[in-house]
Image 1 (spheres, rainbow, N blue to C red):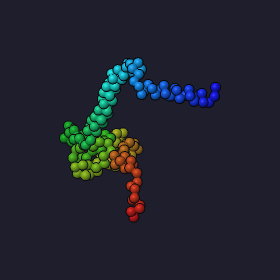
Image 2: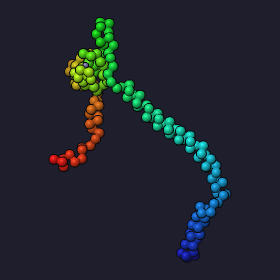
Image 3: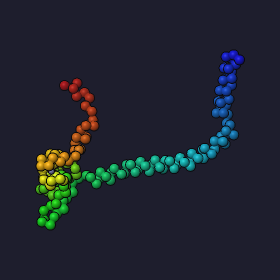
Length: 160
Ligand SMILES: [Zn+2]
Ligand SMILES: [Zn+2]
């Protein structure tokens, strides 16, 4: 057995394989039929599942965002004074409660206050550590989270 014989064998095998694709081999196609039917049945199901997942992922965060956005009006206590929940920034002047991380009032642009959840001492929302008991409120302001994502602007140094 020499190399020419081996090459001839490989060549005939290649021809046999290509013959399946060039001339329609009905027996081969019919043997594929169950696979095609299965794909036809499973395909739409998987597509529907993917669309459903995408719709779920797209709609779910929007609902959460709408829930967290914007200030809400504080409840009025029995003494006629607004009642502010502990640990959340609030404006005493307007009686508004803001989501965690807000530092200034949208209405009067005044600094927001926060009540320490541990010792109930009021302080500015800009200070994250209680001066009385040392409790740190873990708050991530949105401005910092946005600022850290984009890189340095290209061409900024070259322009000068
Ligand atoms: Zn205000
Ligand atoms: Zn405290």
